[in-house]
Image 1: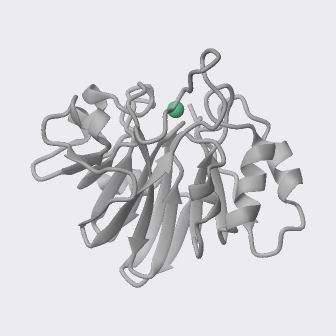
Image 2 (image 1 turned 90 degrees about the vertical axis):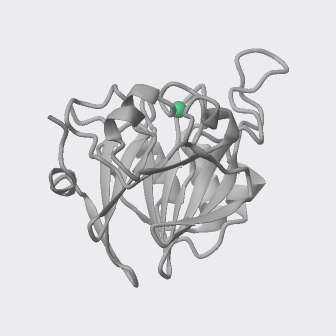
Length: 232
Ligand SMILES: [Zn+2]
């Protein structure tokens, strides 16, 4: 049996007050996370590798990219229910018939949440010379406006100009891992550029979070919160 939204709420690690009510962050696994807002659940990148029963039924599902840790059609089908809104980049929408395609820079509202697709891509890292793991334009990070609270989910990216240019982010979920995204040192440099009030690293398997903490030590106004995205 799948977990109910209420069960998901019990594993929330952070509660943020917004003008739309309490927002709870629920780390699930790697890039999979849920946001609970009143009685609604927003689910990001559900992946079947998450421990059984930890992925809740969702009202809104956001997909960032086509790689298997982000686009898992079976996990989406498990998490959906009647009326679930699914939003993702066009490359992912090809695999899920009712997914609403959102392109980089485009905006849409769902559940009263403003959703802006932010480019996510590699600047230099790829499987071989001349190739990138994530090409610009294919995947989406997301900037969510939840009442007057701004939440950023980076997706798999390096430190792009678009991330650096973000402002007034209340909570940022930023990826780090090699070889696909960026190391903690680069993530820290990016975070220092856009200065979110709270930083929660995610999608960090194999990364030294101590390195991130050291790089951000003494940064007034940026609170680093380390959460376990690999709890068995
Ligand atoms: Zn990934």
